[in-house]
Image (cartoon, rainbow over the protein chains, first blue to last red):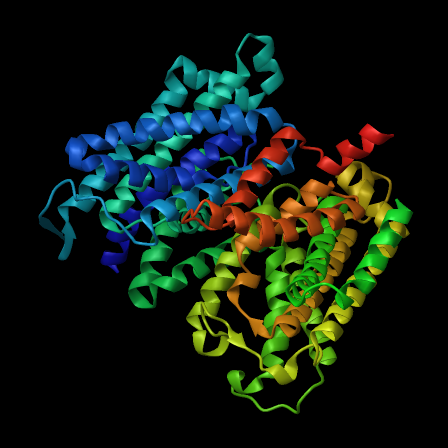
Length: 278
Length: 313
C-alpha cells in the first residue's frame, strides 16, 4: 500500500507538469491542445538526441526548443484560426499525428530512455525507492511551485491571469493578448517537455506515447475541472495513484482503461470536476 | 448541381463494365467511406457536436457483424444468421454504444464530448489487443469468403453503390426534416435554441444515435465487402481522413462532404501512395493527409467547397 503511495506520488508529479500546462492553455486561451502529448514526446527525444554531446545539460536546450516549438505552433497554426473552435481542435490533432508519423519515420517504433540523473537506492519506511525517482519528484515539485509563484507574483503572470479572467478588458488596459497567448503556449510546452524528459528516465518513450499521454491528461483535467490549474495538480496525484495501483495489482495495460472509467464516472457524478467552475 | 450529380451517378453505374477490377474494387470501398463521412457530417456539421470517435461506431458495427458471422470466436453457438441481419445488428450495436456515450457527454455543454470521444478509439484498440484471441489483436481476422457481400466483385460494387445511395437519401431526408432544422438551431446557438423551446439534449442525442447507426452499418458493410476486420477501422488515421473529407467539402452541407470523400479516398489510394513510392520515402502515406488538413484549415477554415461555391455565384 505504501508502495502505491510513494510511486503514485512520483508519477503523479510528472502528470502534474503535463496537466498544469494543458489546463493553463485551456484556462487562458480556451484552446484544447491535442498536440500537448507531442510536446511531451519531443522534449524526451530532443534530450536523448543531445545527450551524447551535452550530457545532462541537454535537458536545457531540449525544453527551450520545445518551448520555441510551442510558440511557433500558436503563432502560425492556432492564432490565424482561433475564432473557429472546432478547427483549433482539428488542426492540433492533425499536427499531433503529423509529428508522430515523422518521429516514427526517424526513430522507428522503438522505446527509448533517458539516462538516470543519479543512481542508488534509498529505503523509505521499508519500501526501496531509486534515488533518481526522488530527484524527479523534487524537480517536478520545485517547478510546480515556481509556476505558481510566476503566475501570481510576476508581471507576465499577472497579464496571464488578467487575460484568462477577461480577455476584452485586458486588451483595453493595454495587454497584448496575442503575446500572452503565445507565452502561455510556450510555458505549457516547456512544462510538458520537462515532464517528457523525467518520464523517459523512469519509463521509456516511443512516438505513440504522445497519444497515451493525452488519455491521462484528459482524465486529469476532467477530474480536476477544465481550466483549473490547481484542480489538475491535485487530480494528477489521484490519477497517479490509480495508475500505479492498477499496474501493481493487476495489469499495466488496464491503467488507461481505468483512466477512461474515471472520466466517465466523473462526468456522471460531478461533471464540473473536483475544483471546476461553471 | 443536380445535373452533375446525375451524370456522375450514370458514370458510376456503367463503370464496372469497362474499368479495371482494381478500380472497381477501390470505388466500392469509396462508396462506404462516403457513408462514414456523411454520417459524421450529420453530427459534427449539422448538430455542431465535435465527435472525434466516429471510428468507434464504425469499428463496433464491423466487429459485431464479424463476430456474429464467426460466433466460435466468442465461444458461443448461435444459428447462422444471414449477413444483412448481422449488418443491421452491427448498426444497432453502434447505436446502443452511441446512446450510452451521448447520454453522458451530450447533456454537458462545451468540450466534454470532444475530450471523451478523442480517447475512445485508443481505448477500444487497447481492448482489442487485451482480448486478442477473440478480436484478433493487431491483425484482426478474416470472416471467410462465404460471408462476403456477394459472390462477384461487380455485384459487391453495386450493393455498395446502392447502400451509399440509400444512406445519402436517408440522411438528406433527416436534415431536411424538422429535426434537421432543430439541429441547425442547436449548432448556431445552443442557449437560444433552448430558449425557444427546443429540447437540446434530446435532439443532440437523436442526431448522435442516427449518426452512430449509419456509421455502424457502414462499418459492417465494409467488413463484408473486404472480408477482413481489423483495428484499422477504429484507428485515428481513418478518423482524420473522415474529418479531412468533411472539412474539404464544408461542414454541414452533406453534398460537400460527399465530394470531399471521393476526392480524399481516391487521392490517398492513388496520388499519395504514388508520391511515397516515387520519392521512396520511408513514411506512411497518411502524412500527406495531415499536411493537407493543416493547410486546408489554415487557408479556409470555413470549408473549401463553400469558397468555391461563393466564387461561382
